[in-house]
Length: 430
Image (cartoon, rainbow, N blue to C red):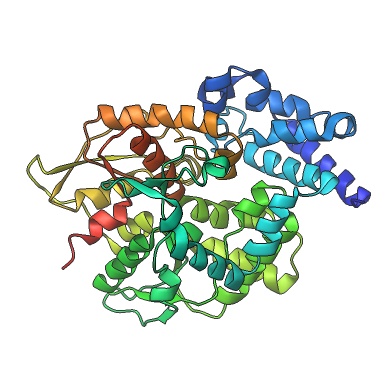
């Protein structure tokens, strides 16, 4: 039985935050999900109308409320376009916690979040086993993108074109690191995030290469956990707090000027969400969480704003690269110029802008799993914009976006590479 007093308190907090919504409907114009469904229940205004009677609605149809709440990418497009400044992401995340506290987790999410994600050593071992045997069940389909498909797994993953797990994750190649500041006088803590660690270790290696080149010391402790966003967005606050507390204790052992990540979602979670969900921690852990959050910074932003990387003068021509702005980087953190500056520092590339560069690609983490057809419809628009730019490469600072865009391009048979901006910048270093 849920703690009714705690639920009542959370419902009151939710009511206080929703008062600011004027029901103007400005969120309609920018919601990627509404653009596909044209269903008022899918847009923020419709969800807030539902939440205004949340207690009554949960008693009447808790499962229906949960399904409506979960049909959201959490991309933040509505919040960025809200004239009243309503803290929409805070509202939705708190509402998911309330509904999950009332209903409990599904068995699948319980296994993934509580059984695996909160046990990093077990999680790493299971992924390592899966990486070893993945070739048996998959067939390569696009060598430029590096994607595969699988008839064996189609009952679970559908007809997705997916990127394989790395043969050697970053945590195996570089278990830990604690180097002193060099010429820059700076030192960073490095938080690769789960997807970079297990699917794109090349991005992690590029970050380490760039930091070494610029004389930036790196603190990379062993035993890092997930940033917690899969648990928080699923309404599992207990797992979220375990993950955040474990990371906070781990990084509190190091001394560094900034905590750098190559993942837009990890950065936004640590920077923006960690300070908002600290009530459950003791005083020491709370202080560690807030200190880590204060220092969190996107790797593109760190290299440009702190290290001083600049674009170079160069003739037109070279490999054409376009940029997809991840929602968590552009809309949440306001980081738009820095990835372009990094790309501009490589003389072999020419930057070409695509239409709607900051429009959501449709991934949305677990949204992609639960609502794949909607996710794919949104992603096709992103794919069309990439192709129309005539780029040879699309660069983006979020590994989840890299997965989604790779799927969309690969299914269409496009031969356009998908890379992280720091990879392209790292090519300039011998």
